[in-house]
Image 1 (cartoon, rainbow, N blue to C red):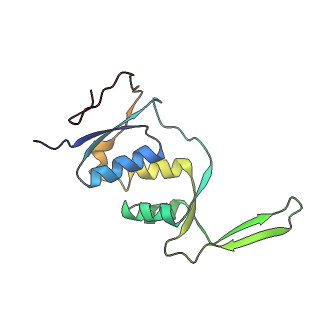
Image 2 (spheres, rainbow, N blue to C red):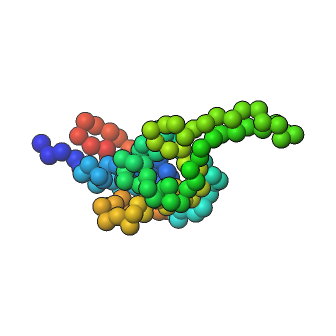
Image 3 (cartoon, rainbow, N blue to C red):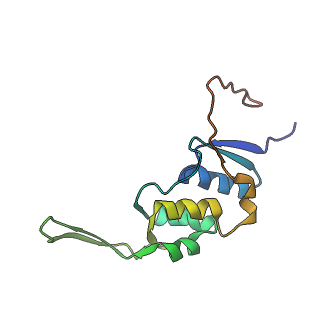
Amino acid sequence: MQTAKKIIIIGGGIGGAATALALHRVGFEPVVYERTKELREVGAGIALWANATHILKNLGLLEEALRVGYLTTNYQFNSQSGKELVNIPVDTFELPVIGIHRAELQSLITKGKGIAYCIQCEPEYGARVQEGLKQSQENVQ
């Protein structure tokens, strides 16, 4: 019996793109389907804690993320009047905490480092998944 290598991923956002990249790196052929016709800059900045930067390191993208993002050393919370309420150091983890714009992160994951190994996971934009899919032990139809 032949092992299936093609994998369909529904959703080309950060999670879908990262999944496609990781699967491609271990020999699968991911095809990403995204409802929007093109990825646009959507959202704002996000914080990537050590568990997320660990994934970026495994994908070979951590150094690039550090170049376009901002190394975070402390999380500080202030009251409306400006009084410091909490100041938590976050620079003691094995891997860094990074502040990065969602669009920058999306671009890193979908483009990688100009990586040829991700050519297979170029999203097919404008695609829609139809209802009525049936799954068996052998395949999905």
